[in-house]
Length: 503
Image (cartoon, rainbow, N blue to C red; front, side):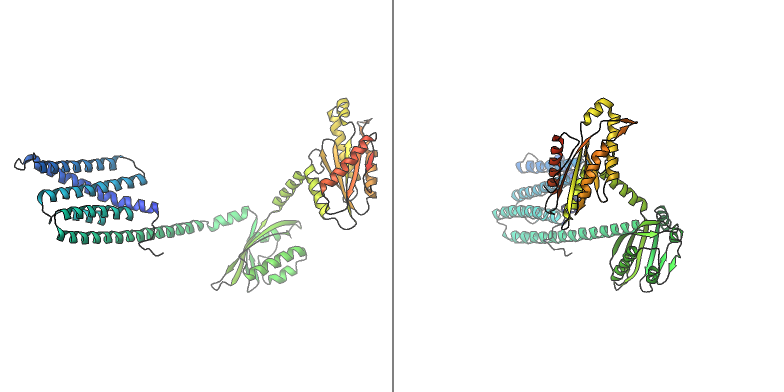
C-alpha cells in the first residue's frame, strides 16, 4: 500500500498514536512552563527595581500567572480525569491551541513594549508545535496559519519588513516538516497494522496445528470413522486401522479401480458414486461429499458419508485424495423416523392432513394420459352419539378400528389419511377406478360390523367419491368435489356412498 500525503489514516489508529505522542510532549511542556513561569513570577516579586506597578510589567506578570495556572490545570486534568480516547484527543487539541495563542500574545506584548524583534520566541513555539505535537493536518495548518498571519500583521505595524520574510520562510519550513512527520506516522501505523495482521495469522496457524495426532485419533475413533489416502498416480489406497475392524478388508489396497469393480457385495449405485468421486479427484475438485451404502463385515448394509479433498503438488496437479468415511446409519434412521412422525397422525397411524395433501398435489402433477386421481372422503355418522352413549374410550376404539379397516382393505397404491376428528380420506391413482369404487362400498359394510367387547355398536359412515384426470387441475378442486359428494351421501339417509365419478 502506497502512503501519500493525501492518504487517510484510520481515525482510531491516528487517535491512539496521536494521544501517545501529545501526552508526553504536553506533560513535559506543562512542567517546564510551571517551573519557568514560577521563576519569572518570583523574580518580579523579589526584585523591587523591576517595578510591577508599571503598566507593561503588570501585563507581563499577568501573562506569567495565566500561563502558570493553565499549565497546572492541564496536569491536574490529564492525570486525574479518566477521559475516553476521543475526549482526550480534543483536550490536547484545546491545550495546544491555548499554548500557541498564549505565546502569540506574549510575543506581541514584548514586541510592543520593547520594540526588539530579534529575540521573539514565537519561532520556537511554532517549531515546537509542528515538530513535536501531532494533530490532524487541517487543525495544525489552520492553527499555524492563523498564528503566523496574526504575528506578520503585527510585524507590519511595527515596520519590521526584514523579519517578516524570515518569519514567513520559517513557518513554511515548519509546515513542510509537519507534513513529512504526518506521512511517516501514516507509514508507521500501516506497518504496525501489517505486523499485527501477520502475528494474528501466525497465531491462527499455530492454533490450527494444536490438534495433535493423539487428539485426532481420539476424535476419529469416537465417530467410528475411517480415514484414507488415495495415491492418484499409483492407484494405491491406504486406510486407517478402523477399515479392517469395520469391513474386514486389508488396509493397503493396490489397483483400487480393479478392487472396486471386483466387489460383488457392493451395489452398482455405490460403485458409481465411488468412481465419480475418484474421477473428480483426478480433475482436482477441491472438496466432495457423498452418501452411499456399503456392506460391513457382519453382512449388514450401512449408510456411510464420504468427505474427500484433493491434495495438489507445486504445479497445482492433483496427487492425493484424502478423506474420511463416517458411519451415518443411526443418523439416517433418526431422520427417517422424524420424517415419518411428521407425516403421521399419531392417534391412528395414518397420514396426517398436511402429508396427504402434499401427496395429492404431487400425484396430480404426475398424472399420465388416461390416469385419474380419485379421492374418497369417509365421515362417521352421528359419531357424537357414540361418545355420549358409550363413552369416549369406545369412540377412540371405533376411530382406530375404522383406520385399520381402511388400511387393510385399501387397493395397492392407495394412500390413507385422517383429515380431522372422525373424517378420513383415501387417494388412489389408476386408469380404472372400479376397484376404488368397490373399496368404498366394502368400507361401508365393514364399518357397520364393528363390535366393542363382543357387543354391537351402532357404527355407520357416509362416503363421497370424486376424481380428476387433468394435470392442470388442483388438489383443492378434487377435495371440493369429494366433499360435495359426501354432502349428498349425508342427505341420502346417511350410511351411503355417493360418487361424482363420470358425472
